[in-house]
Image 1 (cartoon, rainbow, N blue to C red):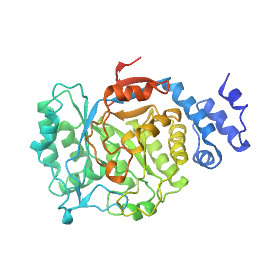
Image 2: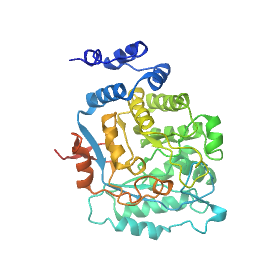
Image 3: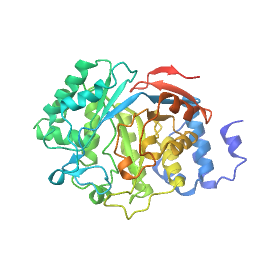
Image 4: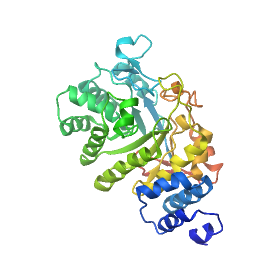
Length: 374
């Protein structure tokens, strides 16, 4: 039975039938069609469509990697309204600031363990500059050359490169030469400048974020992309955000995956805004899968969403659950995520995947398959 034959048994609004036909033929949907899906499609229909697209690419495979995080500092010169993690530089008594030796000690804890990636992100600290991070990267590379180093949001990169008075090309090349291999997707938030002015006015804007990732792609480095949803943005803002990402991916092909990030309202300046429901989570993930046709992978970051809700998203287009993490990130636990001790063993993450009929596949950072747990 074809997708359209199956869906003929459902009660689908007439406005959505042309979209269903396009998706079945693997044609790109428009911004207006994505907005119709947000407004008119129920979660059952979104699940069927997103799962169709996901399984047409990957079948039942669900990816994860063995990774750990280093968070150099939560001290930051910026004051984003949604952030529960950072401490302003001028009031940093309860913040942390790790030295290169302390961070290298974290890496050494994993000696002899089959981790494949270290993920380095943190606050924007004025004393942790480009030279500091190049020295850190070189130290990690010298100690463990097989470890993929993924590091620094565009917010961190913009600050350290501007402070070094280098061009984007020069700054990114210097980091690459030191051993940086790819970028995470953080700092994107929502690209709409009016929303950005209200939630993160003082940090790099949308054009700057996109320029940094474009430069990384031009240097042969892959990256991820995120979107912070569920706060004061509209559906139109989400689609505009994804459109800019889709356009850049058409140009460079350098994005590995897209990661919707749910706004959490604990202990931040937006605590008055209620968190959105699981229905809105489903919409965000499923429509991302349908709209971002040139992004191979859609990730549910389980430390933020919670492992059970991340597992649920495997029925709504998601094919990746990130990694084992190993209790090494505080960004979302401090904001009120269900995961207050974000750590899963390989067995636990495989069990989470197999429990819903999917096949766990260990990957490296750029999605080479390392082991299938059939």
